[in-house]
Image 1 (cartoon, rainbow, N blue to C red):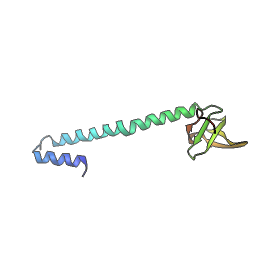
Image 2: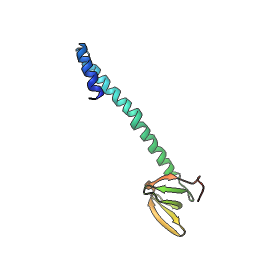
Image 3: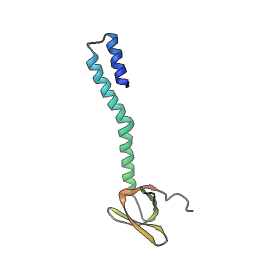
Image 4: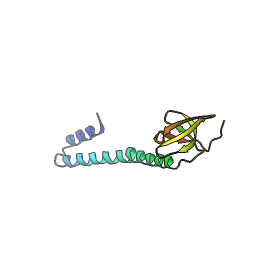
Length: 108
């Protein structure tokens, strides 16, 4: 049983017939608000931060792609990046595939 079913059964057993319709709507709205605060809002904030990071990429930044490829940014275009993954090994990746910045970490 879910929480809403338990609350509705408790109200029916208590004899609150007149206000049960309104209380159901209040509970439904409350559930939607809680979901928005704990799920949707943080996800939107994270997406905005990631977009800002991708727009702020500069030549020489050390990055990681979604596929787990570590590299250094060599060239930046509107939608793509040219990254160097090893000595004279360069690959072109989509800008949206970049997820992390490792410019501040110590090179091994």
